[in-house]
Image (cartoon, rainbow, N blue to C red; front, side, top):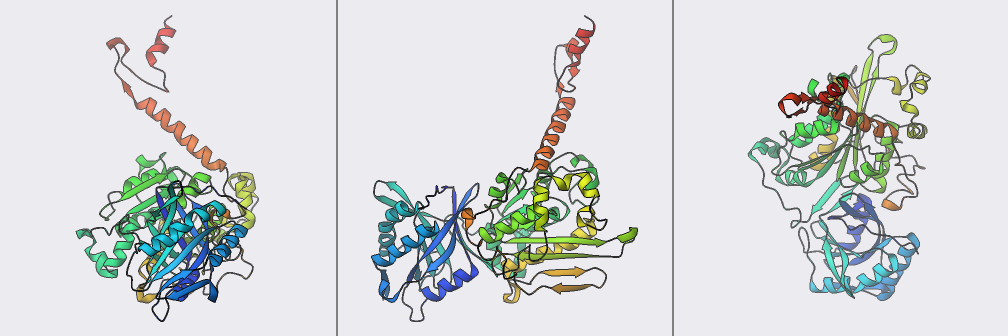
Length: 517
């Protein structure tokens, strides 16, 4: 039996794929209007501030394992079968049931409370994970709670902030007590008139992670702040440099030498339109354990990276942890020093959609090369073909705007579903012809992300994070530079004969005193 240490965080959530949710709803919301139930298996997903239950599979009852009579009851044999399946899979147990007449987030009736609390202790003891309760309302809204031990032989429910359904669409059910509907602002009148109040309510409560604060990332952060997203995390280890100024929104000469994430977070604070806005900047790489766990706190990730390793990391998060990832890229044809054309593309990856590897957005053979630091080795780069993507500097501002616009369209469709369309499909824009090609096929048959790795959460059999040396060196260099700058510019008031300026942390008067003996 596999025992887990479940991380109890301040925020709890549940996520399931669109296909799992569809199958569960078809069983739970009966045509005759009676309640029904089923058990499911789940795996933990541990972020820094959020713990999520990832629904892996549904265990439908046999005819003799539950009794439907307006309400519904299950047999001890059904519960024991679920526990046996859970121990084999190293998973936790969830009880799903329906409230056909309910609307929105559901509370627990006395019967619901008794059914769940009386099985919480046994589920916890056998699986090593807390018992999970899920309710589906007649309007399709989910609600969820974990059962925690409050005292010997007594368990109490701890409600989730949200339950998300991820895949061909993104549907989020928010707990109105923990995440109440915000007040809409006068600055959002035009925005709300486009897609309606309910979409705006969802946007304001979403937590969106911007992975990469470069040219595309800055445009995306500005955009989501202005359309009313209330929780924004920016994750980037890099430093603003002079050569970034021609393509980086918000960057000025005074930004050079500072953290890209910090510069961007400070800039968009004044652009945000939500009633309450929380913006975090993290100077991590998503390839590091710290950056990885911060990404797992988010409801949506916007990928603005251009290397294979972070894309491989984000691809795994999208399928194993069910956090949808919106990604894009730019390809410029400037062979022989002549500008011949450009392409930029955008796509959303999640269960039921084509993954980044199958879209050829990263070469899995280069992931290990990057982990070993070869992609930052000038000798290795010089050995690559002249037209290799790693030798190009393609994030020209004009192209970044186009790419960010297409990524933003993917985001809007996933949340607002214009005309009922959540997925516009991966798109590739050709600058020369002005045409957009669409990719409509799914992943390859042997794709591991959509098969063996999907919905496993923390229990995936591989680890793609690790020590990211270039991120460490970049942060260290920035810290040294900042320390020198502070010590150089800091004025210190001393006795009149000792009024000097610190340089490199050593007061001049000490040097002068030593010089004069």
